[in-house]
Amino acid sequence: MTIPTLPSTLALRHVPPGPYAIEPWTEVRPLVDGRDVLADIHPDGVSSCSARDWVRPPGEWPLSAPEEPREVELSNNNCHTDCCGGVFVTIRREGDRVVWSSWRNTNDTRVPVPAEVRFDAAEYDAELARAAADKTWEEPVDTVARLTATELTDSGWFERWDCVLENVSIVREEPLGVEVYFSQRMDRPARSNGPRFAFELPVTRDEPAEAQARRFIDLIMADDPRETADRF
Image (cartoon, rainbow, N blue to C red):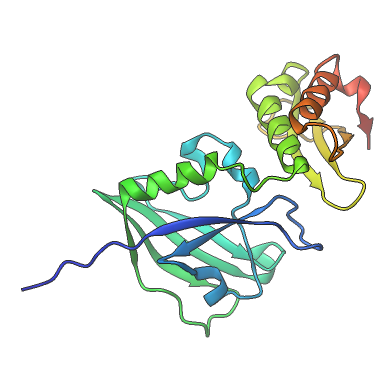
């Protein structure tokens, strides 16, 4: 008699970035059956899943599991993976299971990669939702960045001015801040190729983060952003 294999469990842990990280948003690291899988197979790497990616709708979360298999970048060397390598896995939904398979470690092909991992789909989806909703780890600068990015994305504010929101970044060194980058579309492509602009917004630890975010959003949305932002 074949004994069914119990599904693995997924837990997502928020880890603040190091002082020299290219990605200033907090890492979201996957733990499979309680083990930090990236620490095992890419100990010097950083997670490619950041808190920035969980501001999106659920279907666009980096570890969401569609019916059609898709390869996901799990880690990098604080650099682009096509340059310095990283860890990849293919994620798919298969009935009541979510499957991680076809692991690739382009950082070091000598390091063994996990075998196929299967999760209970309901528990998997619940953990993704829990991690997306969890804000207990946030510092004020994280909260300001998240609220600002969400509002500017959902409102479509820059599109009204024929512009593209390119990035909302975090400055973690003192003085703390949030930077909003956008550019103007020249010939209406999906991405911009026109002039670029930036808002640099200081963040303090003394004022409630929600109030700071609201003030920054109101500042950006008060008028044509091309006229009030710094051009570079």
